[in-house]
Length: 376
Image 1 (tube, rainbow, N blue to C red):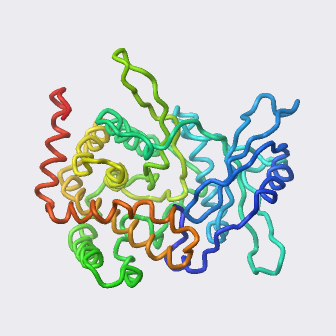
Image 2 (image 1 turned 90 degrees about the horizontal axis):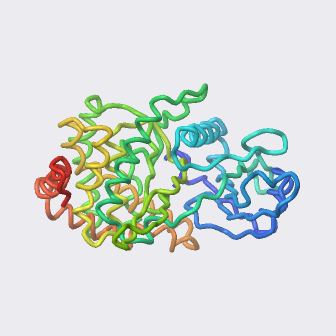
């Protein structure tokens, strides 16, 4: 969901390349012969699943790729895209299931492609990533074991990124980035997209609580680089059979580093909990399993733990409000934009109605059960 900075979001233009144009890009920019291409869903960039024909020059490389065409605003920050590419490669070298990045025929990781027609758009940044196997977590029933592993993955990711260095690393200080979790108060200017209803009332309350109880504690949170979007469509899994014939899932792919920014460990934990709740039949119970996995790598401090509830509520609000606003701008993409909204409002209302103390008791008791070796 790599939407541009808040001040620029209305000027953002999503690319609209046809299949034929995208195929031509792959051949001209990356020197690969396309045998098949099809669009992939995307929030505000444009993605294509590309299959290539084997030639004497491509026999050693992948045969499937994802062509990513960045939106107009992201294309204005090539240094940020460069950092994302290098993070992907760094994590892959560290053993994470991230994509490899294909060089252009000129030896670069990206290419700025100009467009014709007097549209006023200077160009789109294009890159080619290896296609990762697996199914999105959203498509499978998530077990406590998988939720724990995903929480652990989030913790390992942030821990490993502490060792990442790059000359353009400062580009991850995205102060006005609407998806940075500390920027929940920026949602105020988009509230009209919700109309006048209980959903809006809850969002207004969350924003005020966020100002009072989260922004005042930021200095007590431990900083790190966040992936920032470990949602149930950005984590891929593959299955195998246990000795008892049950399906066991392992993470086979981590996608979309477009929302990376400097943040805090507790932000990553909260974002992961929120997105793992979306498709769950017992959403409130998800948090404890994810938290246990995360804390097996990075135990949260008492102050960080006390912020989890509002941070999860804040991420729900970000996803739901921005989706409603984006639907007004891009009604043709409504089905994809409103993925979270199908269950998200219900989950947010349930959390709010239960209250912080009751939700925390469930989360923390579940997380404690892993310490005793008996997960709930």
